[in-house]
Image 1 (cartoon, one colour):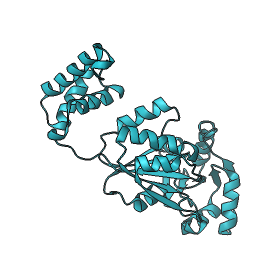
Image 2 (image 1 turned 120 degrees about the vertical axis):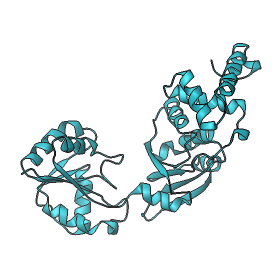
Image 3 (image 1 turned 180 degrees about the horizontal axis):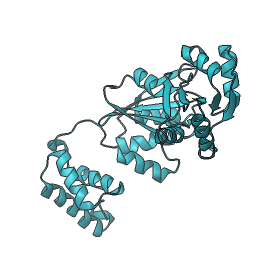
Image 4 (image 1 turned 90 degrees about the vertical axis):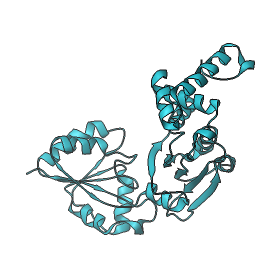
Length: 292
């Protein structure tokens, strides 16, 4: 019989939040794959448990190479426990490749549910949580970051991001540029830790606050785009929506048709707005800004 892969959630801050099953699984596992073996050692000491199985590292740098080794152990009947530094494996952390490999080999995969920075930040944000999407980390390069944000500029669900503290001010400024300076957001810092802080407000204000310097692990929650009716949409907004779709890879004809559907406007009206912007751009900067 093949073994079992166990994905175990670990505390995102306070070790007292560790799920009760985590200690039992740490002692039971034949192999413990940890993102950082030093952090694993500190966690087991805090929980007062001893790992009986073999401990191996499993992080972004060796994930591809180590996955076959772990799959081989699982095929031999081992119980493999996967833990990351904080939160749930596979969610912006190592684990996806191993889970996918196990699914392909028909190896059982189960989980020990645990703390989640995504859900904790959502609950604390004060923003709508009935519908949301998790976007993970944004690209580090400014142009790529703006492009990724433009892809979800019209997303009505609440958005959740992870970000490094030294990039927070640039990211919030980019969000204010793309989503609008007044879009509400919450920056959740050091969740469940001693210096936990949730800063709420318009993106413009949060960007100014972050410019002074912020430390710790960061989760950003951003309000979804407001619903708009045809009366709220001027030609510039229609052109912007077409541009966003083109930058995401759609052909202009397809983008125009999609914008017409989402706004409830005739396709001809959207097309005319795009043509007008294109003609204005050809006449030079003084004539206006639009599609090239």
